[in-house]
Length: 283
Image (tube, rainbow, N blue to C red; front, side, top):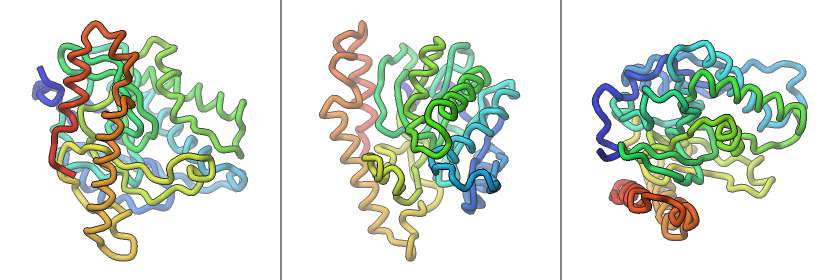
């Protein structure tokens, strides 16, 4: 069974308990309307500024946003979908397949939008264990959410509230250490619509990140393409760069690393997944 041919009963909208949009001052109306149409009614968790936040770094404020959603996720009986305010879903999101077996009891997180992804293993059913950074859109199980709250406490104690931290890149290793498996989708379930992040740039990271390959057409135009007026060429340019970057990462062995492939008992399955996901003319 291919990764995009998951049974009807495993559609995303059937397997999610709650959907949370984490936001600050951003408008979330389009995102809320889109998720509701997809059978994924949501709740907005909007951060309210507190006096003690004045000296907090943007990365720590972001962590606080996610932590609030994780606390809510620990109370759910099913996995929780968490998206940031600048996530732009593809049309048909609710009918897309869950990227992991819903009956599995050792799932940590599953990214629906990936940044710098890698794959480690592909199951006979087509589910791909892997790594991503960035938490633009992801699913978290109740028990994994508790471990992520512990990560938030560790960041506060060891790094502090005023310093930059790439805490989202630690999630995979934290959950793997707890014997949980993390998953990436066959293709991205949406796009990161946000504008460049100056904090990332100051710390040697890329200012922007986009989905390398999408499952389908986006439900609405991302913010980066409407800055100063709707600009189709700006959108097409951003998507073309993202597609080319994804193909380059595949060719350079960054999506599927050579040591992983050499150590796998089913290398053909890994290669098939890695190559097939890029076989699309869609930007």
